[in-house]
Amino acid sequence: MTHKREIQGKVVTIAGEKTISVVVERRVMHPRYHKVVKRFKKYLVHDERSEVKVGDEIVAVECRPLSKTKSFRLKSVIKGAE
Figure 1 (cartoon, helix red, strand yellow):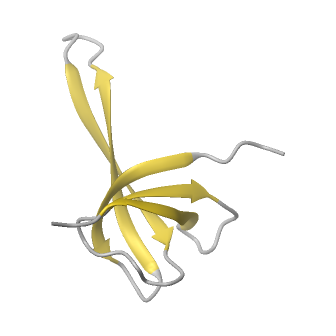
Figure 2 (cartoon, rainbow, N blue to C red):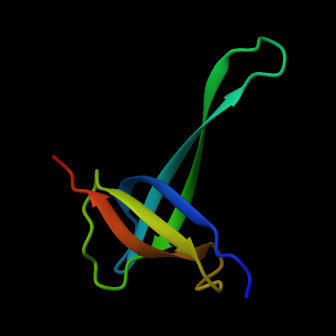
């Protein structure tokens, strides 16, 4: 069985009835300036029970494509929004 990719990020919008938009931040070294810079990417994540709110920290796991742009499923909520 292949390893499922996991992403961890912050919920930025509720994108639909069972869909959330998650922004994932990663830190990379700049090739020329040798300084650590932040890179961001947004993913659409399937939230079956609509249990998360904007601001929550979540973990999502890769799954089969659920739509044209959605291929991650909610695994767990790490930290709720304040």
